[in-house]
Length: 183
Ligand SMILES: C[S@@+](CC[C@H](N)C(=O)[O-])C[C@H]1O[C@@H](n2cnc3c(N)ncnc32)[C@H](O)[C@@H]1O
Image (cartoon, rainbow, N blue to C red):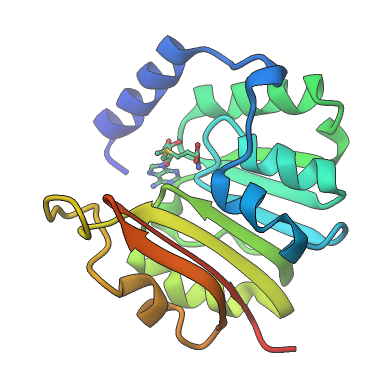
């Protein structure tokens, strides 16, 4: 990622500040489909930001690796995990996903919330263990003005067609998908 873009994310998170734990709500996609998520195993949170999704997964019992290009966001995510009492199950790293997925073993959950990089799609599918769950949400062109960072109509189900769709939708400028790798 360009240095200027990274700096902008840092500035945004610095201005926002770390949220109090009481205000760390999980993304809707997780809260609405909680019963689909395992309560143990390994998870990745791609572009984790301040770690709300990772902390939710860790509270469920998963061991989570969260990656984000913003060092400020990663510091805040570590602090949120510590205050939530799940620091030992959360490992956050500054990492540029332009370089692809960091190496590691197959995982039971991949969360990719409000971040879209089509170049990662194949690696995400390959990284899921049998029965592993993908939860992905992105900006969408459906119900919004088309733009380079927005998923085209039907893009997520098409990109992750090798997975079994559990739920998904698009509208109001958002697209989301919950899908599982075959056992
Ligand atoms: C809209 S925020 C979403 C954060 C979090 N997933 C959430 O739902 O709150 C997008 C995140 O992507 C991160 N990001 C952008 N480009 C990235 C890259 N190339 N590698 C890693 N993280 C990146 C930003 O730093 C930011 O935290």
